[in-house]
Amino acid sequence: MIERARQAGLALQATFENEFTLARRDGERYVPIDRSPCFSTIGMDSATPVMIDVIDALIAQGVYPEQYYAELGPGQQELPVRFTDALRAADNQVTMRDTVRGVALTYGLLASFAPKPFPDEAGNGSHIHFSLWRIKDGKNHFHDPRGRHGLSDAGRAFIGGVLAHLPALVALTAPSVNSYRRLQPRFWSSAYTAWGPDNREAAVRVPSTRRGLEMESTNLELKPCDPSSNPYLALGGLLAAGLDGMARTVDPGEPTLVDPDTLSDAERARRGIRRLPTSLGEALDALERDEMLRASLGEMLGKEYLTVKRSEVRGFEGKDVAFEIAQHFYKY
Ligand code: GLU
Ligand code: MG
Image (cartoon, rainbow, N blue to C red; front, side, top):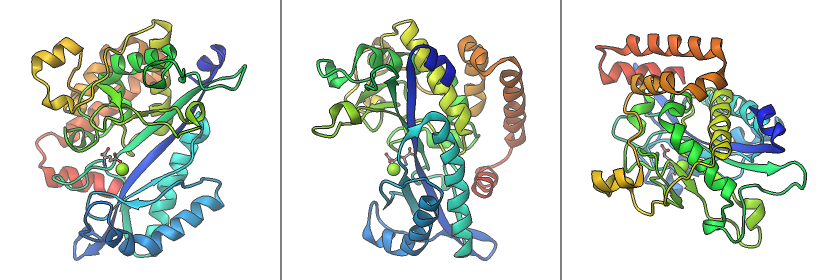
């Protein structure tokens, strides 16, 4: 997909905005390290020693954290790292997950990147922040100072492509049974194929740019991505969907400024907003029907991916929530 973009004179820059849960052993089970309120210094106090070591270890490996804070959920942390070219961004994601887990272990803690570690609490996302750059003049292809929300026509069409393919794309970006417990309204993770400026309930958010750095900082954010995803497939699928949108000049429709869950069914239908799949099985059905994404994966990978993931779905049939959570909590 990187090569496909290069042939169009473009290069993707990206990063994953990771969230994860720090937990400690309590008898047979793990419990979050704290019950701190959202974004609180109390949460930072309990996690700071381990987080300082995580940050040092990442910097030593050339992965640069940009900010750190204690997130909404109990024991939940957020640590976004600096964007880079697409392949390196995927490599960094692997480094990031292993480094966080490894450093946590030295404190006797378990770091979990499970999409929904506790059923009623905030999930762990790894929103993809991305922008597309022109190779010939080094400019941000998503940016147009005269465009609405500072977006170029290409940026709008890229969003259009992502939204058109999103029910199938989430089979790659939210690829676990547990992922669909996360993709619910009012958890800032998105649940509908909507987009909007600074809309935290939209699947594609257009974040505000930095004053004086509008061209440089224009980027898009894909929310329905979680850290149980294979970052190579997630970024490849995202790029395939966006490039397809640009090739077909897909209109993303009007931006949504409210939580799309608060709109009536009729209003959502009028705007072309669809509910995202509510289970991995549904997402796999959508991927199976999406010829462009399957062709982009290639015949063998597309077929094998569906086979392996379908067997995973079967492995959870008839099992309860506790089983599902435990399987993901420890594996990711
Ligand atoms: N925890 C949210 C999620 O599951 C994201 C929160 C945020 O916007 O950083 O995607
Ligand atoms: Mg967050």
